[in-house]
Amino acid sequence: MPLDYFTFYGLPESFRPDEAALKRLYYAKSRETHPDFHATSSAENQAAMLREATLNTDAYRTLSDADLRMAYILRQHGLLAEGKQEQLPPEFLMDMMELNEQLMDLENDPDAAAQSRIAAEVQALANTLDVGIEPVLAGYEQLPADHRPAALEQIRTYYLKKRYLLRIQQQVATFAARS
Image (tube, rainbow, N blue to C red; front, side, top):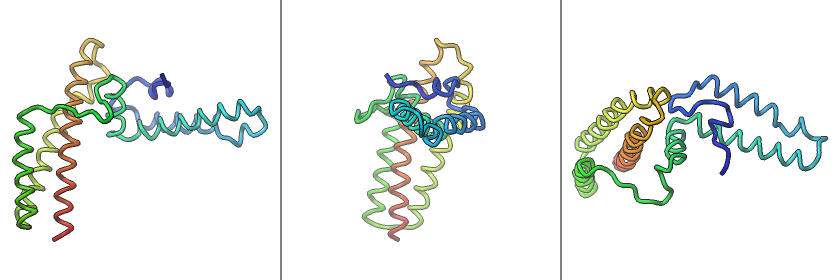
């Protein structure tokens, strides 16, 4: 199994890591592994440094982006599987079915006022989700190990809902671009 990105940087697993520390660690590792500093070393060492530099870049890109970081942590805990259809709560899906019906109506009969109303409704839902999950994200690092699975399930549900809302926002933006 590849090295965990948080372990790579010596940081605790967190949804809200110290971004300044992360950047410092990234630059320090970049200097350590830069090919120019290993040009005269053995081919094996050069290859090892290139792998380390690639890991450093991948780890930093992932951990410095909140959405990528969230998906990464959820995958690390086996809570997100690529290509697997994830289950969302039925009440959320009912709300989304209603929004999707409004989008279909909008596609058949473009209406700027309806489009604005749907966009505002989706944004309000996204904002409510963000406000609701923030304490869980901020407090995750301090949770005892036995409380983390429940928090991760909450975060997983949030992540899936947020992805769904993002798709709807993209559809609304597509309609806006057409009008």
